[in-house]
Length: 236
Image (tube, rainbow, N blue to C red; front, top):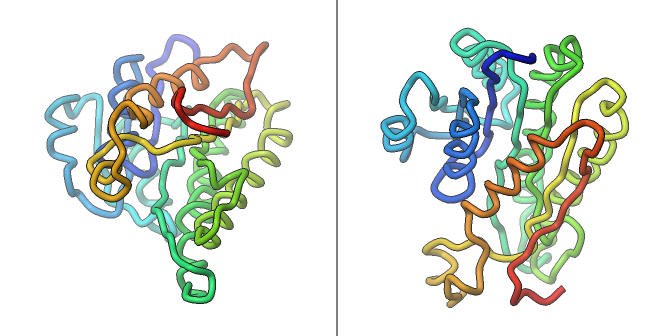
């Protein structure tokens, strides 16, 4: 893909990391498609980045037919996909005995099965080009399951296992698979309203996006499989 304008998909776009990732990718010369369940908040991002650089596509990442259609639309507009970032997730905190099995399934479908759908759909072109990046966004719960996070942690552990296996399988084919453990709370309104945290106690979304770009742009001779990041005040 040398010399070509590259195309990236960010699954899980929204205020915070998803939006910042799209901005960073465009600044590095990528054409970007953002996937989310709705069009909410997408107009501002399109206006900022321009339709020639960014397209928003409503897509339920847990539905393989919707993912197939969405990626086909990206390929038609921007060409083959060289970077796929799986950022789709939602936080669920509840005691195990109160957590419905359907909630366990819902989180797994969004965080792990959705990554399967997206990755499988874009891999054929990456394999043929012997180049590409799959980046999976993890959390503290990917490696340390806290009380009342049984459903969330189960899904994040599954995503980490998927990414670890794919890194070993696809690396020899020239495809970089990396897993980012975000060990801390990212700054947004919820951090203040729900957790009573200040900005200097949290991770800044644009800083995480910078780290993601470092992983995406790494030379093949020095790939990182997994990186964990946290604010300086975070205990670990």
